[in-house]
Every structure is written in structure tokens, then in C-alpha cells.
Length: 573
Image 1 (cartoon, rainbow, N blue to C red):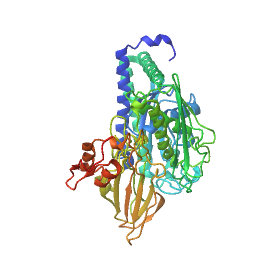
Image 2: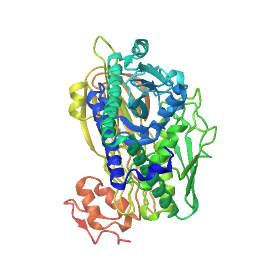
Image 3: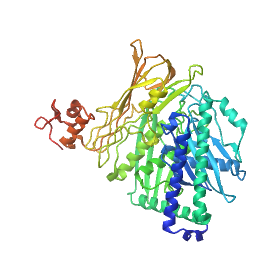
Image 4: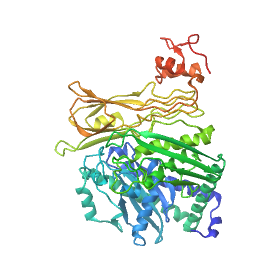
């Protein structure tokens, strides 16, 4: 692989064919996973990601899905390689979910399979997906865990298929450690099918061009990524920038959790230092280091060469420094169930620092967290079901345009909410309203995107759990833009009583309970008084801004017929 003579075997055209082919392979892998999965959170929500990697565990092709997973899938492959060494054979399949190895929570189960061609190991296929239940103290997602042992079955690299033959005792163990065995094994089979799809598709390419040309093309792809990243970082002015923010809580107590980031650009190198962030906390917002690095890669990619796919040559210009005692460097027995909560804030801090370094690409903060609503029943006599979904919100205003409304958060990428038709067909939960939340986006010359309202009504007795974040540090504005509104929750019980917990551990709710959730908006970018009258009027007509908000936030009076009162409005900046 390191032979310099391989460089010229693959010409530029062949290199581009290989680049696009491996991405196409990954898309086929994910399509296979989505079509075969048993859980709605995968086939509807798309809480999954797949990757095609070379024999050294370097990323070659990735698919749409949860982008937070992509940058950490290579860690799964490296752990399998380190653990099994040369004891890897054609037809093998490995599984793992350990939070400290792969970085995410135990519900994210990763499957890795080697790819052989002509008897030689030439790569790996990998698929990570969220399992509905992994045997934790609560069904579904645990809201109040304080150590890893409460969060479910924990697996290091484990061979579950040997040379094409399933190892029965491991499948039995998985069945015995989940409340939803048929669903979990069905999702596992779908992940294995995805890996097999990648193996089959890659073999088709190798049949056509051969291993030597393939390896040379991969080397070219990696080198192109390295060169483009070096050039992009070198074009940024040198300097150091610092940002900090606070999570509402760690899920176990009420104390805020500090997230801090220092970004330094020196020539062709970008250095990220998380010193100043909280240490490992009692609650479940701790995160494994590999997933922290993956998040920073994702945030980097939103600002640096976003049009190019991630490969094994990406990110060599970025150095990440994480203190030993840090919530972003979780160690046993730290709880990690809500590992991504701090990562959403960390991404915004990173992008804000780079927005100062590259003002022409400045982007205000987005609503930032997954904002999870969970309804379920694990009663085998009445029927088991589970509806779990992340909720969309508002993104920050850009230097050249408004932020997007009702868009899933950065870490989740292609994740989707469960459509009302699917929810009401499969689960005894009615989605009574799904609407834009007016005035939730931060005012600015370029307005922040709006959050959403989702109103659920339970039709049977069931359980409900909630996790909503970023009320202490809602999406902030840039360049004179204002902050957005944070999240809000209201639960109205059949007896008329109500409450508003942003975080709620799974508990029974009666039929007829109404759960209303409002997500936050994105921060504004630029002076709100510089926003043209006609754009404010358009916002009011579309329901993004109320007439009261137009006057309060923009100094624009809107009459009852939605016509702008120019004389009564404040002068534009």
C-alpha cells in the first residue's frame, strides 16, 4: 500500500470512478439496512450509518445517515483488527457496542465484516444502528443512569459469525438480554446484510479493475484529501479563539455542565483543545474520546471542504487535545447514554470559533440537541412497541442567508422524525399537531431558523420518556444577531393537571395524556434592524415571525391585513 510505484497505476479518470463507486457501494449498503430493519427508528428514522473501509481501516465510502457515526466507524474496525489480529477469516462477522471503545451509547450496535478478494483481505464493511432495547434498567433509552452498568449489555469486539456460520450461543445471549428479542435480532440480521452487500458490490469493482489498480486509486483519493485540507487550513489566518457554553444538567442532578473549546490555527495545522470543559460527571452526558473526535471532524467538515466526501486522508491537519479528566473522554464506569448532548454544543462552539476565523462563512449556533420523545410498551401480552424520535429545530443564520427551519440537528444528519401516518398506524399515539414555532428563531439580518411544535396524544396506557436540552445556552447569534428561544415541554394529564419537565425518565402515562414539545430555533446573524421590510413581512406571512415579534425584534409594524406600516416602522440600519 505504501509502494510509490502504485501512484501512477490509476489515472485520474480511474480514480474518480473508484471514488464514486465506493460511495455508491455504501449507499447500497444503507439501502439494504433500511429495507431489512425491523425497528421504525432505523427504517423510518434512519438512525444508522454504514461505511466501506480499506484493509488498514481507513474510510473509503460512506453513505447518508447519522454523520456522527461515520467518523467513529473506523474505530470499530481498528478495535476488531487489534483484538483478533490475523484471526479474521472470510465470512466472519463481529459485533460491538462498548461506549469507551466506539464512543457512543450501548444502544448503538456496530457490526463489522471483513472483505476478502482472491483469498486476500482487502477491506471491511461496517454498519452501526440504534437498537430499541439493549437490556438497560429502563426499556428503550435510559434517562437517569449514573454508571455504565445501568445502561445495558456491553460488548467489546465479539465474533458472532464464524466463516459464514452464526455462533448460536452469542445470538442466544443477545436474545436473553433484551426485552425485544425478535426486533433486536431482526435489526442485527439487517446490519449483517448491509455488510454483505458492501462485500458483493466491492467485489464487482475488483473483478473489473484488479486489486493493484484499486489500491492505487485509493492512495490517490487519500492524498487528494490531505492536499485539499492542507490548502484550506493554510488559507485561514493564524490565531486562537475560545468559546464556552453550558448544558442544562447531566441528567442525574440539576447543576449545569460546562463545555469549553479553544481553537488555534497555525499554518497548515488546526488544533482543538477541550481544556476547561467539565470533568467526568455523575450523569449520562459523558462521551467516549473516539466519538468526540468524530464530532469535531463533522464540525470541521461543515466549514472546510464540505463538498468532498470523508476519506482516510481527511482530517490529518487537525489535532484534538482532550484532558484525561473530561466528560468528552469517558472512562469506566462513567454513564454515556446521552453522549451526544454535549457534542451538539461542542459543534456550535467549534463553528463559532471558525466563523470568527473565516467571517465570510460565519454561521450562528443551531438548536443543538436531538430533543428526544419516547413512547413505548414492553407488555408482551398487550403487544410490544416503541416510538423513539429525535425532533427537528432551527439552524443558525448564515453570513449570506437565513437559517433553515424544522431541520434535524447537525449530529443526526439524515435522521428523520417518524411520519404521522406511520406513528398512528403502528403505535397507539396520535400526532395531533406538527407545526413551525413562531418567533423561535433568533432575530438578525439573516434570521435564525424556527423550531417546531409536536403535540402527541396517547391512546392507550403506556410509558413516556423525554430528553430536551439547551435551555441554559440556547442558540446564540453572531455579528449583532440575537439569541434564539430554547426548548419547552408541557404534559397535560387526563385529570387536567400539567407539568413541564425537559428531562423525564421513563414512567407510566395514562391514555389521553397530551405531550407537547417545542424545540428551539437557530441564532440570528447580523443586526435585526438591517433586515429589509419585505423580508420581515414575508416571515410574518409564512408564520415564522408573529406581528408582535416583528415589532419587538425588528422594529417593523405589521397591520392586521399583513401589510407593512412603513411610517410606523423604525428606520432600517
